[in-house]
Length: 93
Length: 84
Length: 95
Image (cartoon, rainbow over all chains, first blue to last red; front, side):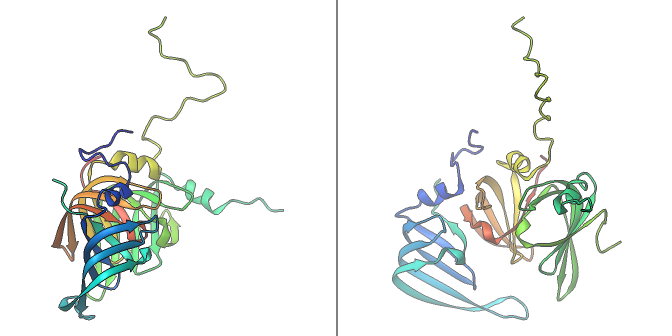
C-alpha cells in the first residue's frame, strides 16, 4: 500500500522515530503536558525525555475549565507509556 | 445438547440493520451495522452518539464510524436507541 | 485470448467486491488520507487528516485541531495518538 499522504510515514510509530533528538510535546492523562527532547521510546510508548518542562493544569471539577496551571522543570524523565495520550513532534514543514 | 448460537453469530446477523450500542460509561450509539471484527470493533453508518452530561443528554450525528470495541458494554440488535 | 480476465476456478468462489464487506479493516483502508474526527474516551476530539494507524488503534494525524466542547484548543502539524485513549474514528468527509 502506498502512503496516502505526502509525508510518507507507514505506521504511527514512524512519527515518533522521526522525532528522536527533537523537542516534542506530550499530552498525558491527569491534565499534564510535557515539552522535552526525545531520547528513546518503545512499543508501549514509554519515553525518555530530557530538558523537560512539565505543565500541570489545575482543572475545576464542576465546569471542567482550566483555572490555573503549575510549571516545573526536569533534567531527565522516564514517562510510562500508559499515561500518554498524544505526542506531537516539531513541525516537519 | 441444545443447538447453540455463538454470541458473535447473533451480531453477524445484524449486519445491514440498526443496532444500539451501550458503552461502559455514560455513552450510547445507534446506527446501521456495516461490520465488526473479533475484538467487536464496529463499523457503523448514520450514527447518533448519545452522551449523558450534567447539562443533560447530548446528541451528535456521525457519518461512517469505527467504534473501538474496548469500551463496549452491550449490543441491542434492531433497536434505534434510547429515543425509541 | 490473452485479453480475457482470468476466470474464477470452481473451488474458489469469486471474491467479494473490494471495500464492500464493511469490516473495520476495510473502513480503515478507505479512510486513510481523508479528514476524520477521532474522539477520545475523555470526550476530547481531534480533527485532522488520517496519515496511518496500527493494530492497537495508535493513530498518526496531520493538520490536527484539538476540540474541547466544540472549541479549538490546540493545533498540531502532526500528532501521534495512543490507541488506548480512542473511542472512535469517524469519517469527516464522504468516502
